Length: 346
Image 1: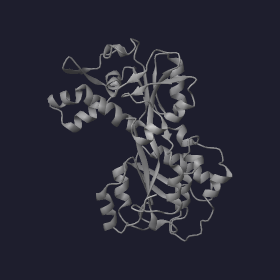
Image 2: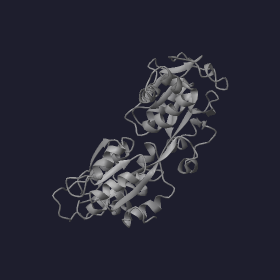
Image 3: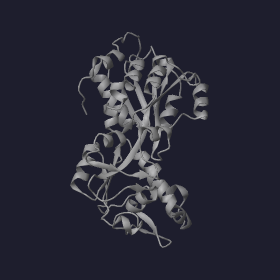
Image 4: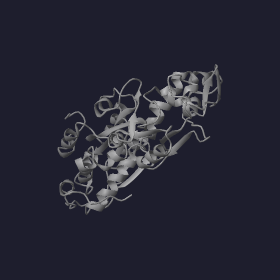
């Protein structure tokens, strides 16, 4: 994807000072699949708007990315690890054992999704994770048995919900918010309904039961959307009974078309997502190897570019793709600017 040229202030953050001598001239990033879409957007914009090469961004998962990050210092190791969780103490220890002693933790924002429907559609006002799992899970618990999902309307499993045909438009497997949707909604919904316990009682291992809880029905009631939220909105516009999963910022910019439901009694907002009160949310991070700053050209500039107001702020392209902007973004920017490492605080 391509983005318009950024403002002068954003470009000033990425000052064109690629003077450090290094055998490798591009930033290398790996890690979380959740952070991947955001990092890829930033990397492309960085390459287009500065004289530095476009950073190489790979996936692999948070744990795999941090493992690579902790392999050591030098041009043959990655510079940044993306993570959908904080680095663990055992990972910090592994890093230290390999000479990676100074790590800059950068919180890029929050992963938070909302459930919204047509402004003039049925009264979808409140959900719990069990509702979403019962609606779209491939296998659900009915009368004590695990069966192929038979539900046709929301009222089939919750009399407080409208008796209208199920139509769910969810983030696809390529979307940045798919992981939080699976972990915080489908998995927890499966557990809450008793389906997880019933699956294991039938002989499934815990791992297999968890995998089964993430499977969604393939009969058209659940549709994965791999594009951005404009595609989901188009589906909702065309279906008055549809429920769509959106990033908070996108919903807030389209309140004339959409109404949002609470989840487990909590209304989504920047505040409830940032505090963790709203259940379908979590902070996202990347970790910078301080020893590589000044050695790998553009590393600090890329980190600062990533958390700039123009990119990571509430009206930036990352918010349009689902990231909830950090209310303390100015403090995060200060951490990067001052190269503060873990343990040094804000």
